[in-house]
Amino acid sequence: MDDDRVAEIVGQWRRERPDLDPSPLLIIGRIQQIAAVLDAALRPPFAAADLGNGDFDVLAALRREGEPYTLTAGQLSQRMLVTTGAVTKRVDRLIARGLVSRSVSAADARGRVVGLTPAGAALTDRLIEEHLANEAATLHGLTDSDRRTLERLLAAMTRTLASRDVEPEWMTYPEAPTEH
Image (tube, rainbow, N blue to C red; front, side, top):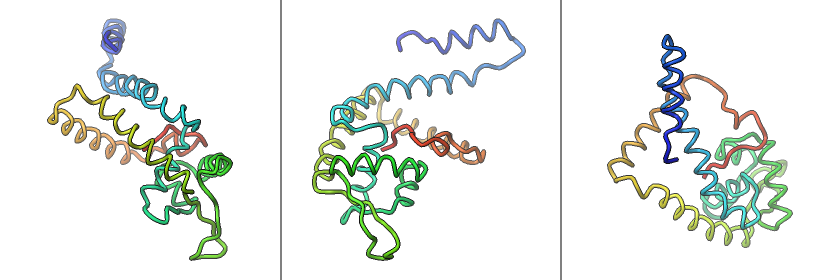
């Protein structure tokens, strides 16, 4: 990302359509670039563990819940910001690998809960250490002040987008980008 292709594109639009303000591309375009680079940088440990996109999200959501590491499909859907259909597909893949199980809810015999197996908990604990180290490495060029500013600005942008009442793509399609 040494070349500032986004700034070049904005310059081209300013030249070709001076009646328009292409400056939002300076932010949105860069966010899209960053998302693609982050995915490429952060995906390898999950791929090496033979986890599909979103599979680690299930494991992480269960592990973050604390013992006994169980949630319903609806709770997983809310915590992972994906549809219940996406949760079902991911859980089925993880059951086949022995990383999670599905059982009758103790609170409601009609309901089912998904829980981490010991193998799933061990894999999650190993991968989260590597994942957080990778994320920290991607931020190494930012000062603490830069990081706090970026956190604040991204939170503000998230609130702004949420207030627009626009349904994000990850809520509409069964396979979503990973969120940890």
